Length: 279
Image (cartoon, rainbow, N blue to C red; front, top):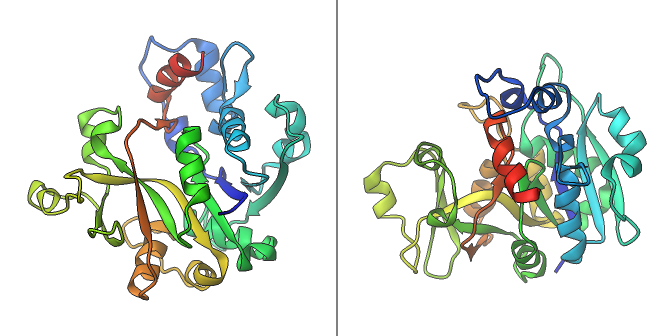
């Protein structure tokens, strides 16, 4: 069990900034998507930032220490977060880490680098358990409680692909996770074909995917985050590669079965669906 969680919110949001030919969004919505970090795009009657809804669920799930990974130019957010978030933060401690850009890079070095830099800036995380999640995903209280309370040192929520409400094209692009009969991670497979998928069903006959809701133990994982290789396809250091390395070192990573949708705020086309849910 842990009471700490890291929210990855330092991405460049390049897909959110991409132009869109849509009459669904208003001019103000498009302007907001183009000018703000996507986690600060406002939703609902109270016009609260997307990340505020996520933090509210984390507090309700029992997390006390929340670490938010921000970009180097995120000073405004860090300095004004109490006013910006518009939620009661008395029951938690908000901490900020900065994902500094590596030399000769114009974009952050990936999710594994975000966690490594956070652990360097908060050394207490090197010796304790903590959870990790995406800033642009909205996770349920139930899923947060499950990852928080698992007895496994290293784990992730293994979502039933059929429970995710995305387009078929988008679903087909998701990596699948291969688990054994005890739900231990065997492999993560990107862009799997039908034959591979049919051989990767879990013990319940489900196709499982990773939506970046994890738990790690600092003692077991720090060296893997520190030494994570660059993913050749993405030119970034990815948490999925850290998972593979930990698994290959004979340390168990448990996939916790879950079947529900996860709201995703990656591009402008996602905004309307988030508005419907958070209105």
